[in-house]
Amino acid sequence: MTELATFGAGCFWGVESAFRTLPAVLDVKVGYEGGMLPNPSYKDVCTDRTGHAEVAQVSFDPAVLPYERLLEAFWNMHDPTTPNRQGPDVGSQYRSVIFFHSPEQEAAAKASLARLASSGRFKRPIVTQIVPAQTFYPAEEYHQRYFEKQGIAPTCHI
Image (tube, rainbow, N blue to C red; front, side):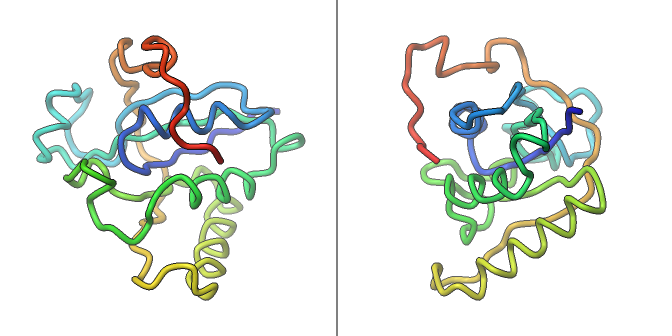
């Protein structure tokens, strides 16, 4: 059985590359989710006016790779305390967000966030949104496996 998990953690190139390093990830597609413009392009999303986040949609087998492991990887690949920003990338499209696909994913994401928030790992509050999955629009082909196409090793090891 295959499930989907969708995460926004900054520029989707690095997020996709990081998730691909996990054993038992079946596939990762990058795209846009959470906005109001149907079929947005990269150019549209970069205006910061569509409401979309750059996301990675992960296909995985939960019998081999539990969703909780994907959440752990998500928290480790970015700073969830910076609203609408990751590193040099600024704008709502770079927000920290978990789009859940089931009540079980919602509960796991909220529990994971609560554990992290009470752990003392971050000095600032976590601003990650946990919201229902919406329409996922795949990004243009040149964005898919971008680092791989450029011969760039993953910059984030999870």
